[in-house]
Image (cartoon, rainbow, N blue to C red; front, side):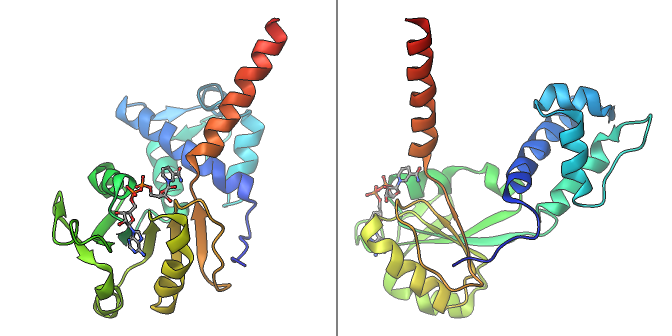
Length: 214
Ligand code: NAI
């Protein structure tokens, strides 16, 4: 079982959206925004936004709205982005390589220190400057390098054993792409990413629209 947050998951899941939209506003050089304007852009009600932010002390002033840069920075801090994170990717196949190639992660402070695989054809190769190492050297690497987040991109059959190896070496956060529910110690956080769930939500809505139109 993973640890529970003090703030509801629904609020936590909305925070990255605030962060993304505020970043867009900053890029457009917008300095201040009313809660009404922010709600129109983001698509949540103004009261929802106020309630969400009140979980963290509240921001903005009556009659002024929000200072975009301040709110962006505060939400970044709330999301833990005021520090960097060392990551490793386990499984250097299609998905692992795609993630390693995505340089935008670095802008948020995520540094991929290495990739690991069992395939001898991949071991020793580099994706950008990230080396694919032999899975047999995982424990040795983790004893020498502080890693905050392990990213699992292997087949589902291997994923649990990999999670066990990561957690027994002190990795306490796992970003899991393998289609399996991992069992981890209480103090370990797992965030699953399943693109298929998002796609199936889309097909549900697609089908519902067709039914309504017919
Ligand atoms: P892939 O077959 O291209 O890559 C998997 C890699 O894992 C291979 O290079 C393989 O040698 C390596 N591997 C296997 N066992 C290992 C072990 N014990 N230790 C280290 N490396 C090991 O597969 P692909 O397309 O990259 O998919 C990877 C995983 O991600 C699969 O489980 C797939 O179902 C999942 N996936 C999940 C998505 C999502 O939305 N969550 C989207 C796409 C794929």
